[in-house]
Length: 337
Image: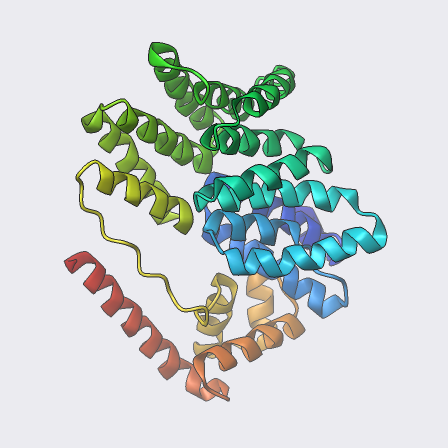
């Protein structure tokens, strides 16, 4: 990314931003991921290139945004059929596996992850296997789960990363019992933490907490479910957070559901552009500040005007002030609740 910016390689910058955004998704930093994806889309629009959809889909899946995923997946499937892009089908299996497992729709997750395994592409097979093991165990398809686990363990032996070891340990835990399951869940939390894969750390706390509750260890279950809920809620990974909330309720602990923001809320990149424009910076200066072109700045501003219901730069300060006040009121109500 730095190299592309330094030499002005606008064609190379969008894919670099997309890959970096994907890293931040797994770090659990959804806001930074969204900024990078948004900038990549803006650059693609300004230069006349097709946007990159992979990271957008992965982020939407972890956020639990079923409508967003459904629309892009259908478009991706058409492209796969027309152009023979099998890699897209492989990616879709993982993406929909995350989405449906997060929403506790395990039959659909099982089918999607199975497709992801069959249509390997972009090295998504390992990720799809992880989703498939969880979905299969939840559906009682233990033979399928064991087959996928065997393949996953073989794959993860090739790497010494925390991510690989964590994925192997947690998937084995789903098919284990007693002290062995307990040890494997704890190992997975440690290994995912070593790899800084925050979304999987949170997910392991969730699965471990679910297992502890089902073995009547409610006090310890609450600790892990609470950690999972707090991590997912902060990202926010809404479907997984809701799943953790329901589990906490089952242990007897009261947890308030997160109030989702309207779809018209500004993206992080739009917020940056709007704030700088409201401060009086020209499009050229905003572009220099954010490493984007003046045309891209104007593209963002048009979206900002539409979302805020205004039609001029002069109205920006007042509109942003009203939006911030509304957000502050919502936050105050959440804390009071």
